[in-house]
Image 1 (cartoon, helix red, strand yellow):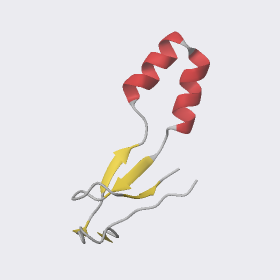
Image 2 (cartoon, one colour):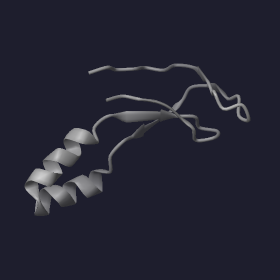
Image 3 (cartoon, one colour):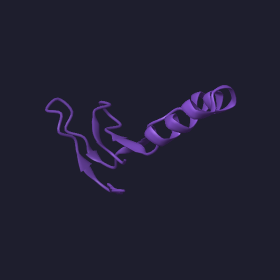
Image 4 (cartoon, helix red, strand yellow):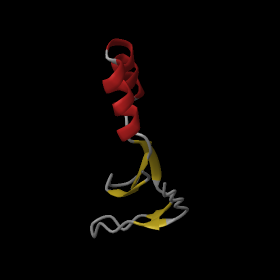
Length: 69
């Protein structure tokens, strides 16, 4: 499992050029995962397995920079 900790980024988007810390966003939706677990156990477990981790995005333009898996 690769863990990437970004402290400061320079956005690769030519129109943005943001310099600073990225925004950390969860990859999956907890509500969807809980509903799947309550009604369909196996799909809920698979959802949490494949949607775990975080994405790092530029807070100014919203471009995805990298993702933890």
